[in-house]
Length: 431
Image (tube, helix red, strand yellow):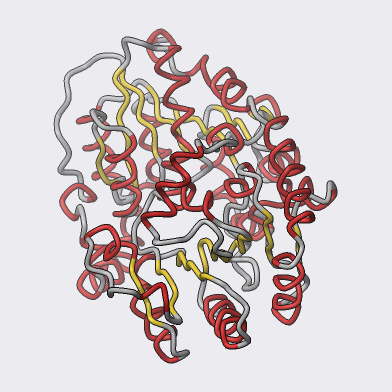
């Protein structure tokens, strides 16, 4: 009965909005048929379904996939995503593995997909709770588990306000392997039994490189037309309001005669046109990474005021290798921060703002050990960048501490897989 009521609510209120958005936004139209259940009908067997909502979760799944393949060499492992860029990331990093769009949370669509895919178990990376999906999976006796689980206080408050619906929904997950005790407590407050929660640490540390071969770093610099002596400020995963700050800083610094090469990587690639307009308005020539790759970038652009705009996906981590200083976005706006682990692991001097609740544990670790710089607001950014760019010894100290901390924090993937492994075996589903 609850599924029927949810279906009615989705169809009356949610579907019209989804259809309108699909008409207006091309990326939402991607995989239309799959979202409504048109996935291949697969044969039976031991099959693990990993769900990665977007790019971040897909990249996180690299060590998870390796761990599962080692534990279950005969199992087929398939992936689902919500976003188009997430799917592209899976296709790039996990060739040979089937990938499809996650079904809309309509009970009849979910049932069709589960009957077609026939998973032994479903593994949700980080946490994405859909009531009908979990309810239908439970009725179909398909265990659903969470790895690298996280739940922000904001999300927890929202779920608590929704009352009994989500309390019962959270209890349908067979086991949660979560990043820290804070997330464990929030899940327990939502009605999840403590014996269904394991604090296993964050797998993000396992997925990042702590060394880049000098030859590879040199190749990345050539791709961006960077000289060996260039000073590079890289804005990673920037949001509206942050690009403007970095552009203004680069313009002022270049106008003063101080050398600086600006590389901007917006969090969402569809924002690149808007960022291009900002750059032109500031008198900087925008040079897209795709143009550099294709050999169509303006001749001699590196000799004039410009900025490189990263409009590709899945290569930001390696581009951090060429940075002198990295600013991590989503932190000067109330988004919660983006992943600062990747540049920290590479030994870079990393700067971020006050809004970092998405990575609170990592931020606390880095800041407490003087391994990164957290500023209190946008007004502190120019002076902070000036100080770091003028002090190579301090940059080296920050980077060395950050790399050492990340190295010591590795090993969570094995703990996450061990926590959920009892629910991934064929024999468990048959009991």
